[in-house]
Image (tube, rainbow, N blue to C red; front, side):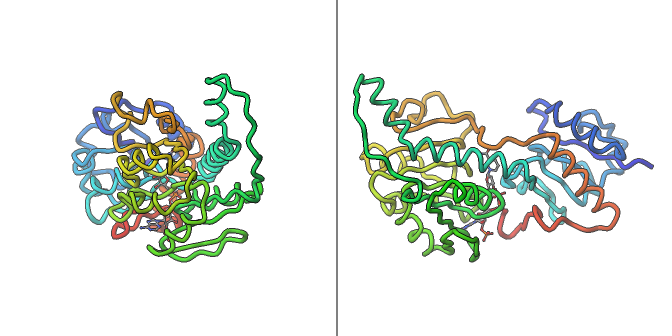
Length: 315
Ligand code: NAP
């Protein structure tokens, strides 16, 4: 019998048809069916599902569910809705690492070559040259040295930047000054002109960047948030920008998305707002990875070494 794999997305969100088509193409040995098209008489058949922002109600209807493969890299929206005992695999895709490291490089260069400052000068009709800073003298610090942070660190290193990184456990990455644990964050921030946040959203990371952390960053430094909104205290960030302690923030992720129209970030001269575009899922590669993980699990019970979410850590 062809195994049934539902594609589960909250009913109030429209189906991502491109992902469903990619799953159908990459998983021809499965019957891929959007959850809302699945007859209730077949819920019993389901042991694995591909999820794309599912609801708890939908997953609770699948009594034999053993594994969900998410199409997202972040796990914070999936973990609270998945029944206990069900394995959660988040998306770990080399294409996403490539896309994210390109975004980190692009927006690091934007800050490094002072594009916001020269744009401001142009608007004021001001012809003024500032001394160049070479990449080797520009200290970039990455919070979160996981799959995406490590790929970004390597890309920045190849571009000649002085790169550091911070993680929960200790790491060794050639050419990167690695810090870990609560004390390590302060040490990394103190030496970073540009901070790139690639932390997941967990209980432990909420509000990581607060007033004290911003005060630790050097005067005139900048932050890029490509991780998740709640890891930054918005009020503390606005205060640090308003006082001129921080020079600029590039923000791609927010507490509430889309960013509400009345939010101060929209009009702030020192903020670049991006609509969560730094590393979208590439449906073709994600579908192949989902298929491989599900196929292996059904054949052998084996779980992937990368991407299995640890419930106690939340990522
Ligand atoms: P990952 O491989 O799980 O890496 C997470 C990193 O954060 C690890 O280095 C981990 O440390 C570190 N970390 C977690 N909790 C920590 C803590 N309390 N203190 C210090 N370090 C901590 O995740 P990833 O694949 O790189 O993805 C990172 C995040 O990027 C995702 O969770 C998602 O939120 C975000 N993302 C955003 C976009 C976008 O378009 N904006 C796209 C994709 C992903 P250890 O290495 O010690 O475990």
